[in-house]
Image 1 (cartoon, protein in one colour):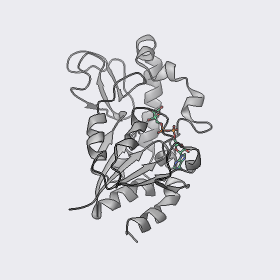
Image 2 (cartoon, rainbow, N blue to C red):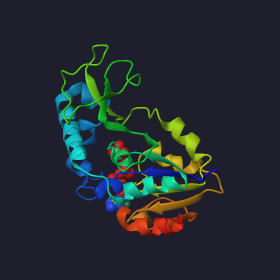
Image 3 (cartoon, rainbow, N blue to C red):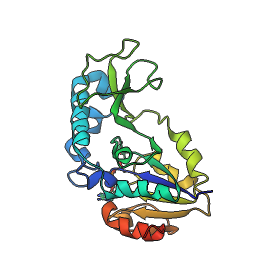
Length: 231
Ligand code: APR
């Protein structure tokens, strides 16, 4: 049976594809207020602004390409069972070839109902623009398929089920600031081998059981290849 690798990824893995992170200098949350664009309250008070914000994000994602770090996780599938648990709403893991991706915070290429049955169905968005006139099957306005601050994270249980029997955990490109996602690293077993990749790894709250690669995602690929026997 193949060994299982779970990858917990965040905005940093897509930085070298040209997509801004949230908390680095000039990150998204330095230029936008979370309360104005990424909460249910923001959607209720100013849906035009929220829609415009995510339309811009979607356009940027569509114009971006997966980088060698995304592609590396696809290559790993030749020798391992690989499950990507990503906080990213971009689809660069999928476009990099990864077969098994869990989107904790949603997928910006999709929309969902703003009515009571939000998780029943996700609607693919054609192109980059979602309009407030676009409706779900039940007649409610479609909203981006993203998890906003203050909302439940429906994919958590699925992610936990993969972490508990992971042989390896690779944490890459996340500041581990946002819960419940950041708490996932505590679900692995004592025998799980843990690696963290982040240029600012020394500033992150992880214990000494992690192998630390203080490099960018792309720069870490050759070392990761050695660790997993791909070279
Ligand atoms: N390669 C690897 N890591 C990088 C790179 C890079 N090229 N560039 C930056 N990083 C690291 C940063 O050092 C930082 O630790 O990526 C991390 C990005 O952290 P955040 O911006 O906080 O992003 P993330 O952890 O994914 O945010 C979690 O917050 O607002 C929300 O919902 C949003 O999913 C997001 C969540």
